[in-house]
Image (tube, rainbow, N blue to C red):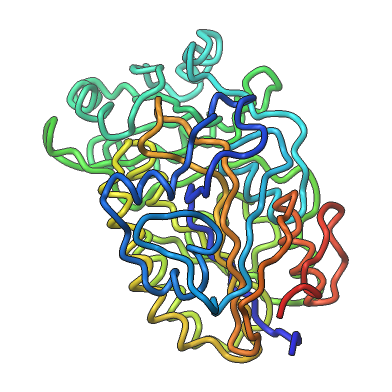
Length: 394
């Protein structure tokens, strides 16, 4: 039976499964997010993912191969030129990105951009470097509160981030400033993938804490995606987590922001009771944001095991007409050098109670095969890139 009415795609943000064939072009030879985390903690305890066949995809300490995996299992590799969140998600939904998003990791933002941002917002700027989002608060948070200067920083991603205190600066003022930054960074020479509002609270260094009122101002996708085609065909396209930001709302019919990845899974579980027909697209960002970039394999492992426990509560809710896809958008090996994403292949686990599983899928040579499969399931306009693997499911 392959007549699915609901597809649930859960992206475990940054959960890579070993270096990609072109890892050398990205400086990522030897990266292996899942493999290295398993070794770092002496084995992962993920019995549900193990039963689906995660250990049949990749060698992971504690997650051994099983004789009869419940899922169809395999790998995907990225065809686009980037290894960032937007590139990975956009490709999943049928796009092929041929030009990397601009980054300012090594240099900070140009003086001309910052001068114009100050003139337009009325606020001076401090920071202007690549930094951890929590460390820069400890460094500059008190100065920001005393002076009203915006904390502007970037990362290895194509982002301009503005951190500001919710109470002394104001949330709406932060959003206003980020909207101006987004407008300015539409110029080709400054065009970052996302401008991100990073509100925080706390009274002093060491006590600052980012809040869940983050807001991303992303570029619009470069073309129509599977999300657009489903929406045009009157199907539901439900976003959980930062999916709505990644696609700048394009193709989304309903969205739910998540406070944490655990919260995102709870939202997903609750939404399974909803009578929808179409796609639920979920991003669980904490693997990447809290643990990968901060090079913390122990925290990453705990997050993986928490996800596995939540997955145990999700699986029984699936109907015969539901299809669950578990995958990732890139790697972020917490044992690797630097703090950047890593160019890796990603797991692909495809499960439904109506499928027998125990089937190894051919390696997908582009993430866009996922979008092609989704449009094939719902018989909508097909994505331009990718090939459906619907007929390969058993």
